[in-house]
Image (cartoon, rainbow, N blue to C red; front, side):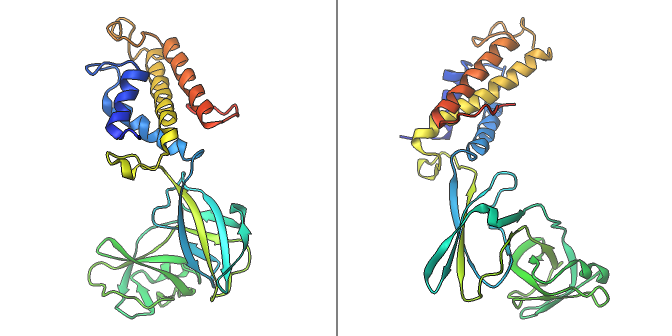
Length: 284
């Protein structure tokens, strides 16, 4: 049975780091930060896969809302035509643009059903090009995805949008570029569809039913967390931030070498549990 978040954090503290409940060498909140970091790194070796569906007809598409910059990866791309699977494309068939300019550009006019928005600063409209994925914003809240239908007009400030605005914008409307992915091949037919499978970081909560880490990998994540924490403590000792005398009361060691050895041990255990045979250092 999977240990819930508080249980596995306590195991890391007591069993792996050998820190008492009253230890100030590393507080529970710090261990939790290392745990979250380990979950992110673990997603590189154990995918938490989600799937999104898209209609054809375009080259650029909005990235899913739960896509995590620096962590998410595309694992599979499948095209369908006439209800039939037409083949599998690997992630190399897609380019990811997940750090685009997401500045909110103020809109002077936009109403429900509108197919054009007009920017308050008209010259900015020239930055928007046909097929660019965008999102419409009202009162600071992103309310609907859209895409540019025609190049923005830098003289009039007008930007054509493909789908008529479905909301009434009454407070500080804006338009933003949206993070997107781009197909390297020709656009699929508008009548076709495709699915994008992608990874997101694992979830680890107090509800065992919400935990996405497989039960067989929970100890591995605990090992990686302990490696991160031990490496951080080794750094503190090596810089003199914690003296050996100050740390004499702690059961877990009093110098940088011992913490480094512990970090190496748990990093090695993580690799062994996950079948990682590379020389990649996971904790530096």
